[in-house]
Structures are given as structure tokens and as C-alpha cells.
Image (cartoon, rainbow, N blue to C red; front, top):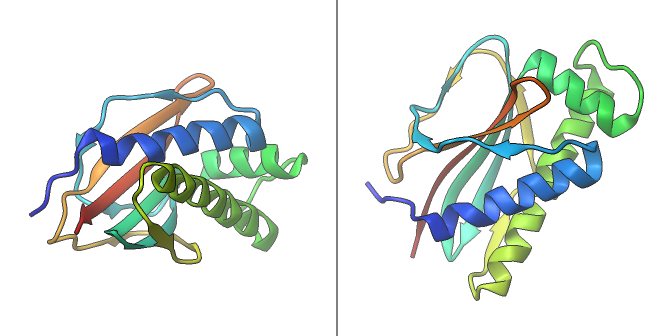
Length: 156
């Protein structure tokens, strides 16, 4: 199983904190990264985006549903109390912006990656990542609200 190094994680964190600040007016602090089994439970909303090119794998941005509603509210500038189609679309676009920005950061380092369109899912699900460890990095804002960035990638 491939290990991910900090040079591969930092672009995700730089892009995530930048986009959250610009699109949601959220100042997120980066928590301690840890290896996590990619299993998620009923109250979770997941944005899954595949990565191809000089690195392969996926990134999963996960939220408790209440936090996803909070982020969607900030993005569309009106209260969101349930994850309807508009809110899911906003959350999917957030993932797209984060990963597009991540790809741009990698390109400045001479690493070419492409991303798949975001898939937004919810509920209890687990993924198998036998080729790369899943590294989870919490992004914390406003009184311990947490967004998790899960990265399972390997380079060529």
C-alpha cells in the first residue's frame, strides 16, 4: 500500500481552506491528519471526486448533514435546513471548486492531474482503498464544526 507524503496533502489543504474562505466566508483551521478507514455513517454527506493522471485515487470531502446544510447556507446565502437538490448541487460545486483548485496547485509543481465530476452521496457506506492509505484531515471552523478531507492517492 502506498503512503502519501506531505507534498501530496498540502495542495488539498491549501485549496480547501482558500475555497471555504472565498465561497463560504469560513476561516477553517487544519486539524491533525490521521489514517482512517473510509467508512461513513447515516448522518454523513460525501463528495467523491476521482483523481487521474500522474497521481491516481480519490478525494472524499465529508460532512455531517447539519454541517453540510450550514455550508450550503453560506454558499447560496439563504437558510438551508435539508439537503434538497439545490443544496446538494451547491455542495457538489464546492467539491468541484476545491479539487479544481487542487489540480491547479499541483500543476504549478509540475504534477498533472485530472479530476472527475463530483458525486454527492449520503448514508452508510464504506470504500475499499487497497492501493493507498486513506488520510483524513479535519478542517474545523466556528465552534468545532468539522469538515473532513479524505485523500487516498498514489503517484506514478
